[in-house]
Length: 141
Image (cartoon, rainbow, N blue to C red; front, side):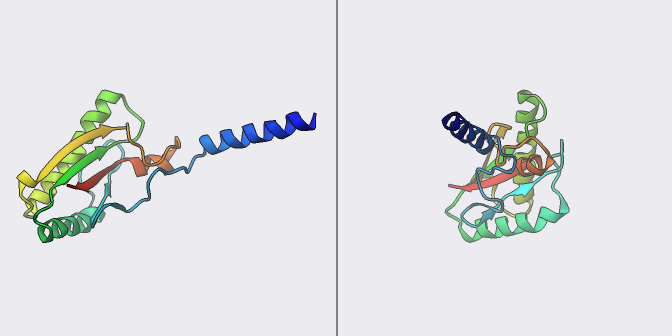
């Protein structure tokens, strides 16, 4: 009986680790190089004022590294259909890209892609994770 209970403990512990709520795949803050990610409200693609300084810093970094290009990746949380989230992620990536363009980053140095809900940063199913997944990331190339 002890042997069975002992094995059951590992199974339960293993399941808890796999389904843990606050599990993160990447750290919050930095995306690549000197470029930082921004976050969005639920079902929105407008740039929040609190992330304008982040975008100004990203634009300054890109201007200082003129040989680098950037891919702006749009991401969503898991709510909504795949099709809807791909479109929303595209709107988010384009909003960030347009903001950088208005700050003087040449359009031909930027590409965008939407991953919708396919690349979550956090894997639990509640607001504490969803806000982390509603983001645009900036990947220098």
